[in-house]
Every structure is written in C-alpha cells, then in structure tokens.
Length: 141
Image (cartoon, rainbow, N blue to C red):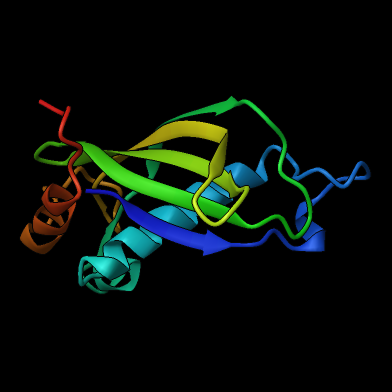
C-alpha cells in the first residue's frame, strides 16, 4: 500500500530559474513520511512524547525532471522494510499532467534508526511497527 500526499511547491521552494531547489525534495520526502504516519493513525509528535526519534541514517535521491513553482505534485510514500530498531521509506514524486496522468520527477528513499532522547538505539514502538507494516510494499521481503 502507498500513501499519497498532494501539494504545490511554494515560490520560496524555487531557485533563480524557478526550479524547485534540489535539497527541498528531502523536505518533501519528510512530508510524505509524516503524512503516511498520520494516515496510519500515528504522528511524529507521538514518538517525541515517548522520548523517541527517527533520525535519517541514509538518504538517496534520483532526479529525473524538475518541478517548478505551483506545479501540482504528489508524494507517494511506502515502507520498504521494518526491522527491530529501523525502517526504510521509499518515495516517488510525480507531477499531475492530466486528470489521470502523472510524470515521474524524483524517486528515492530514506533509512531511519529509532533512538531515545539520549541517542541510544531503541526498538521501534509497537504502534509504529503496525503503521509501517500496513504500508510495506508488496515486493519487500
């Protein structure tokens, strides 16, 4: 299953060429993660309330075509795998081209470890494991 979040880049997201600045795609990935968790019944705030955090330990972005100010974009997010204290989110950012069509702009993934406020590795909470497993891609092992 995949979670979809639709949005339009703000003017402040673009560079002098009116193209979305490359680093902003990682922020869009973050929004995709947050919306996936929210759709599954949890939120980052719930983690923080438990004294837990999900720092990024690895990130990959593949740029295929640029987005521009006010383009109708979609961030599709799914979970590739869930382990005891880590998980990986996969992303696809597309531009809506018609009522039914979308053009792929960016794909990528982020890997996160679960740590306590003190920075010690901690198991993922059960509620987050349940949310993540609901969004695990069919091809994941």
